[in-house]
Length: 611
Image (tube, one colour):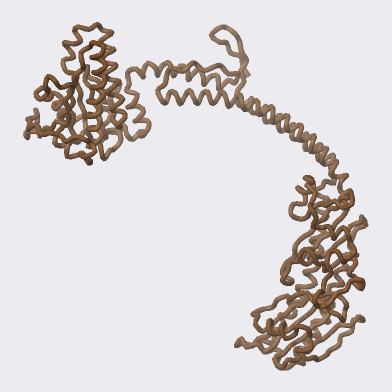
């Protein structure tokens, strides 16, 4: 921070931009830290912990329990099939396969039944009774409901899979089955293995882990059938059959679970914490939170495992969290407002600097001086830019602006001297010297400035660059700064356009009682050397070479071919005419006027009149 004295003598306080930014960011950090502290102290048991930690943990543990019960069944059954394929078990001996299934059921008490179906149409199976005894029986495949269809499906399958949910009358509960085909090494199908898992134990386990807060756990198949629930431990009140092995949501006697898919409440606190793990509903004036997770891979339809609990269980934590959030939001908003005000003012000052710099790049020196800023660096930059504008304004009067703009556009490499094929134009006002003798200095300058402005606009329009003004003459180049394939075309179009605008301007001069301006134009194309030419303290970016001399000589030859009635004459060389790529686009046909010897050249030059 420092004080500075202005030109008027007043003192003003200025800040370093680094200091201003540091103070702003420090204020934001302090306010945000205070808000965070209030949030943490006011909501130690936040909704994030309540819903995402406790409930996700509960749902994840139940999902893992289901996998721990079902995945080993598939693994053991698949092992029996692999042993049979390798010949370590005789697939043609039902006794060996049944013995292996007997071992499986002893190891996995959750398996309620297992069997082997062979090509002979018989099923050798083992069933678990209510008192946990294992009994073995042999039944025809055709006597089992859907047995033949299931066997054909198994025969057409390459690997193990979980089948549809079934109702097992022996256990009076639903169950799932896993099926594994048995094939020999040559791929020939010899039979299939089936194991069933009753799901009554799942309901018992869910009930044992329910917390004493009025909530319930559940497992759904799809969105509308209940696989596990407190009421399904002994589902005698629900009529289930082979065609309908699972009850619907409305049949389990749980009105909250039956309303799970009604329109969720748009509660932002819970929606943000739950994400895609659940939602909130309202039933009879009371809110309930559902948390669930989808489990796939155990049948054609995915399962939805979850639980629900009353909304008021978490509302206390939410209220504390909201208080902290509101306090933090208010503090952060205040900090952001202050930072925004500071940023806007800084940005406005920097934008003014940028706009002024861009104006200098465009050689616009007439803008108003920049206003002062309290930020020290910006104020210093504004003062330096104003001084640079004043300095460049004087240089702009003597340096060709379009040439500098082109050099800036093309890059520094353009400044290196190089040889390039270009088209050079020379123009000269006929009889200007005696005409200027009858004019005062101001009128003479105004006439030349107006004339050069007309020619400069046309030359610039066709991508030409004015190399220099020589008295009342103009030298322009096409293809010098940047390579142009159609440099001759552009130069010829420029010459024709000059003739046109000169005629229009002369019509205005005649109406004002002034003498018309008559003009000679010469064009020649050829190689030149282009680059910085001159002494180290005074350089001129120009073109030199015989091509320049020939173009000037052609302009002077206009004296010999120009009639008194002509306002303008344009002579071009055979080299320029040959370089024109599209003669038809010029709209005129050059007229051959003869051969003319050129000083310094052994061969005469063929000359054409373009206009």
